[in-house]
Image (cartoon, rainbow, N blue to C red):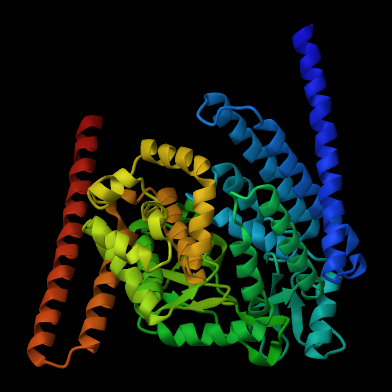
Length: 526
């Protein structure tokens, strides 16, 4: 009875404290809004209140549930997982209710696998494919106002009733042009995204400041800063059209890459009309197997594309989630890759690009002193070991032993997840210290790893090998550009081809090892 009474008292106390903290959070909110000359009417009282209640409940849940628990105990670890799950569900509900920028941030959190707890990334990952939809008459009105026509029928003889996909900022429809009869994809901005964007950013910035005061060990302002910096570019679809044309020219040497053609006559800052490209999402394994697409070829081509973006060109697609990468079989039976959503690209400074490349070469050796040196150039200081683990998504033991020599298994993945949950404050520090471009690279790394994991091609390390080739090319081409002596240039060139030959040999050995493994399995079955 005493135990039951204590539990009832504790539950009532938790509810009371949670309500109190929520009200306090809202009160602090009003104070700061007043001090910063924001009005609740301009912020949007309902949207602001939703965010305040969600933040208050999550914060109070963590504060109360962990009180008195030993951080080293199993109970603490179990409780923390439960807290992450409850917190993630509350954030998901908030993102769906407020939409727009909140969904964008939720998608970004979901993409930080191997960095944030699985409970958050897994729960919020549904936002990539199940974002709320705007009504058809609303988006038609956006087209008519933006392209200055009386009716969409003047432009499109057919416009699908249901969107092919809905994202945080826009949704895409299949259509057919009246003028030419061509099949096109029309990306239409959600009607309320732009007017709500400044409001939502101000709301998030404020509540992140509140969280920083309640939990000083967590540093999340980097996430808000990234949204503030990038959102205006993503809301301008003509900027996306320019990016698409630039990338098409930049990667014209990759015959398998398809960038949809832009129809500028039917485009504006809120409407983007482009060539309709068929394909299946890169994470749709059943469809890939049904079409009998070569999984290793897919991983090689994806690895080459994104590695050249990072290490060679220094021009990176900033939203590389599976919905933006399609694959299909061309007329010759080869794999084609379709890259979508060119709203945001980051240009890497040469110094950053070369230092990041040298960091990877140090990780491949491995050379601890060089890892420390080039991590320091990224601004992480004494947290270089954790930074190396974040970049590679491997344990420190695997990093120091050589990530190309130690195979990645379920045990290591479990260990990484456990450590990540306990190192959130330190991870937050790393993410706050590194240049913003680094955050985009981490998203790309996560995409490549998740693709290989889902396709079951980790044993051949296809994307890893393509990345290694691009690293070698980048560093040695940089050295050649700073060398005038013909003898020195000859030595640098010879060294580059030697390193590339080593990578080719390693790739061949992996293929042979896979053949032997399959042969043994077949003999075992026989």
